Length: 324
Image (cartoon, rainbow, N blue to C red; front, top):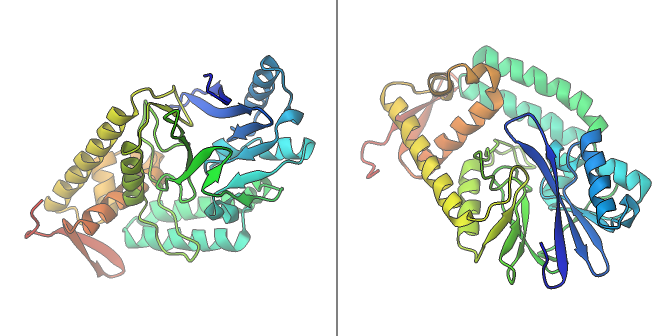
């Protein structure tokens, strides 16, 4: 898409999962070639990047910097390959650094965080299995650490406004160009699927209210003059306002369904998750529990429910005086 002083060139790599594609973007400017996100660390993404660069008269050595929208593996995969060939600056939100560097102390704390929260939600054996998986992933994860230095990104970068849009990830940012009414949005907004607000600890080990953050981030984008969104997956979004409205309405509907389950006597996070998600509780445990915990946090913050701890497990109940 041609702009006044830059061009955004999408790199879209088809995948067989429900993500449909892994998207990252080359921003061609007068004196720079910026890569926003870096796909998966696989040959499909590497070949697609090289092919797209070549079609536009560039090679990997012409990339002048990398900007990462957030720390997830399908957005950072090629960083080490690129920077090993060609040392260039890498920018991300400051909260991404311990995650991108696979900081051992941070990830050890993260495992303890999930062990505690799954216990509090009454997950039992399913929670223990997930914690064991996280321990193994932590040991293997050091291999995927970003080797090069990561510079915290400022509020403005190369003519784009940098907007912090946490929820899907604590460190997620979007690049907004006000004059052209476009947003490179990471995984904040995806056309064909709802972006998960993934439960995470902050740097101190305290639970981040990720769904509440995600809601605020969507509202922030809804209020921008905006015509086109470049997402991390799927096709470009040319009616972002209506999609945001749809996502916010869906969030409210799901919160109401969880509230009804509590009203019907399912008082723990695990009971709600098992009843609502059925087989997905086993096959997509961490995603399911993130959804349930996020909505419980939202309902509690809006004073529609309250909780009390019994034998180390949180039990939720309706606030009957609520106007909701």
